[in-house]
Image 1: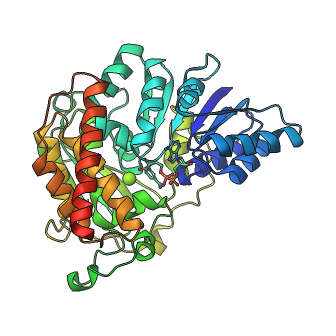
Image 2: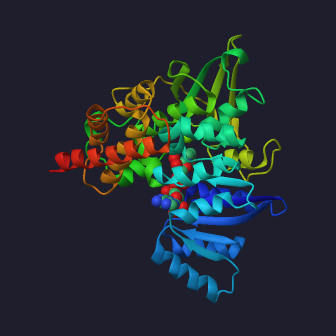
Image 3: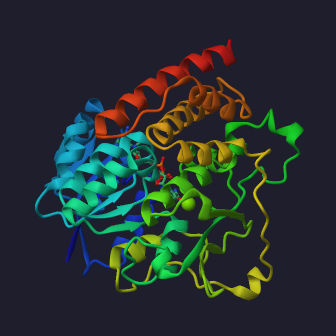
Length: 393
Ligand code: NAD
Ligand code: MG
């Protein structure tokens, strides 16, 4: 029996994880569920999965959940606040932590899980973008098993030799090919992009996801963050990570070897596949995902990414090459800019401009510890807010 904590259980990845868990009551038990402030949904999840703990970041929301849980006669203990998120990741009875909070808020509890040596199912890519070396050091020091859940990285993990030791060259790997759908605006005329709404940006052609990652997909910052994520997960330099636009999202990524072999992982675009793989590794379990019908797919296309249409992708490569705190600055500026776009403060096309201005304005420092990352994150958020005032005013 594997005991799980799910960080961000009310989100898109959280719900998909619970869907897989519910199919295998003999294999998985939920110890803790956590969310930001979604009382109703977390209560329904508590009724179904009977966790020992439920955490809401928000104090008032936690008080509401506490009375619902009491009225329903559930044994679940309701906690609140950021420290409680860390706490439910390090409990001795927890084997595995699904890290599915969105954004920088996911960093500290995920790091706590790594330091405690838990198996980590990593959906929160921002953890690696912000604090790649700190996090990977913690994983190595504690002996955590780290399973990439992002579909591309899960595909790469599957296409690398079993027990990959972190040395691509000695394993005969020449390149990592990271596929991208291109998002909802791949073919939209550039002149129309200025007026796109948050609703249009969140309507992804192939995947149903949270709003932040949906906007990231529309700007292709998501792929940029994933390039940085791949760098840390697989010890791959920016030069050998190639983005390939593949609008059907059937091939989830590929690994090219020196003998000319290219290994790919295919499947329907449904996050339950990588989640089930991460949960059961090295076994395979049913995920509820329909079999891939290649006759229905019929055609697969591949294009080089358009760096003019998607400047965020270049900014991410640049930040990875600058190293140190540059990716944390990129990530923070992006989160603030996306929030401002979703709040209709700035137009879609201003997102990359805000990020670039912040990257240009702030000095890059080496990252020695988590504090260095958090300082850069805070500084970049303040600079991004100022930049947004300028754009909006
Ligand atoms: P989402 O917005 O649907 O859900 C986010 C979850 O995090 C919710 O449960 C929310 O309550 C919680 N949360 C938000 N802010 C919080 C805070 N400050 N403190 C504590 N909890 C907070 O997001 P999602 O689409 O499920 O994405 C989650 C993560 O997984 C992201 O990092 C995303 O990049 C990554 N990811 C998602 C997908 C996908 O298909 N959705 C695919 C690959 C990677
Ligand atoms: Mg992805």
